[in-house]
Amino acid sequence: MNSNPSKSKPSVTRTSLTSQRGSLPSTTTGGLVSIDFEIRGKVQGVHFRKYTQRKATELRLRGWCKNTEHGTVAGRMEGERLQIDMMKDWLKRVGSPKSRIDGADFKTAKAISSFSYGDFQIIK
Image 1 (cartoon, rainbow, N blue to C red):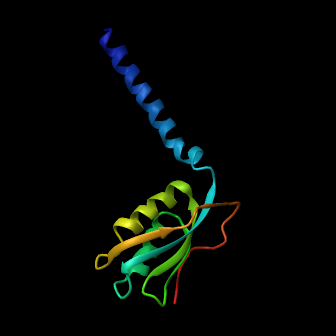
Image 2 (tube, rainbow, N blue to C red; image 1 turned 120 degrees about the vertical axis):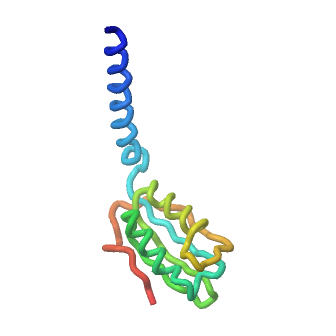
Image 3 (cartoon, rainbow, N blue to C red; image 1 turned 120 degrees about the horizontal axis):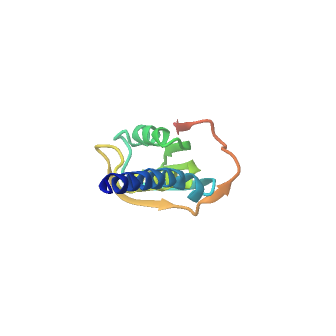
């Protein structure tokens, strides 16, 4: 009979830890941030902006991206720090299926009090 109560205690603890872990992202992000980026490589003519917009929307980020005249994709993104970090990793490592990422530059993230954009847009 002692094995049943001891089995139930870990599950209660796991439930408690799960709920605590679930709340960590909102308490550790510290609010909204904005960051500018520029991605180098084969990123034009390979649907990089479209895939960037999709990923940003999936992560609930707002902002914009555009092709530059020197062959890069530049943009700005706003959102919770955790989602921004996930997007930075995606921009550095994944991109669109036919892209080749040679480098990614990110400016220092700035704290913002509210969103400046309604969604994530492609600027043409």
